[in-house]
Image (cartoon, rainbow, N blue to C red; front, side):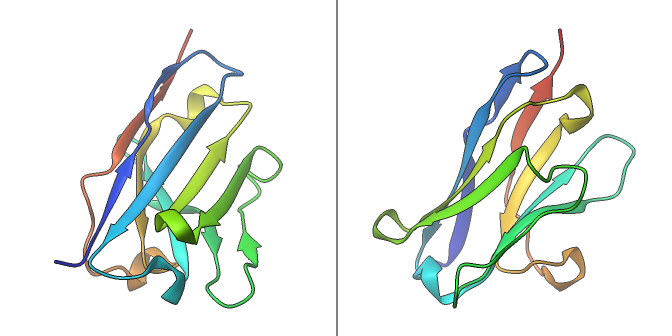
Length: 118
């Protein structure tokens, strides 16, 4: 069964850090660009990072650039999202998928909750 599983979420204070993991089963993650997305209550789902399959190029929107970093560990079949300098507005459910655009994702996992509050 082909699927991606997100993990690593939790509750942190503003300024804290978390590292999310996106682990694949049933296929090799290195074949695909992998995107991280988030959805906050009452808001649309948005892309927060993407890493390409070919050259490892990355993308971040302005809202997280300089604070978030995406990386691959092909030996572990996992993509990580290191999140530093977390802010309350980063509170959301975070998802990963084999795409960089929300519109191209045809199936979502369960996600992992990130809560930033004092």
